[in-house]
Image (tube, rainbow, N blue to C red):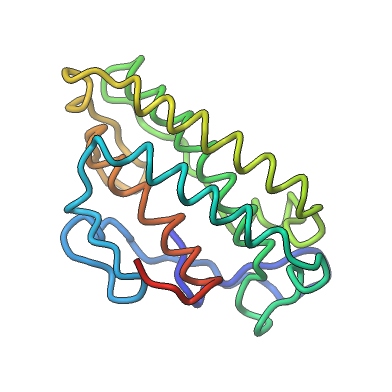
Length: 190
């Protein structure tokens, strides 16, 4: 996923420099930036972490709209762009979780987060609308993780780049992304 130096853009802005890092390493060691130790996250903690993260984004998005659209540097997403990305990560991970629960060993379609940021004009969206959409997407995903049965946590799915997940490792991988992006915006470590 993205980094604190994540590049993004909207129409008319600087070209996106794609983030090509393989962030699956967060399953093996704590993140030196945001401080989250994803490997230590218990499956029973995932839903609460999703909800808490969404609540924090609601506070961020209550700011002045033009300030939320302003990038700290041209190559770093604005707070609003990060929030749109987190909303879409919640939506995407819900789709992928359902694939893992409903199919045997599915292959996830590739998702270009940078292309999505441009196509969806993240920097032009309305913060209040994004806040509501993010909260709804988080609740749907949190409830879905709460519904995973003991036997389903070992089900598998594969990313197009070859990364393989169980539902459990997938849940821990997921929580890092919104936590890290909240750190990108607030500078507050977990």
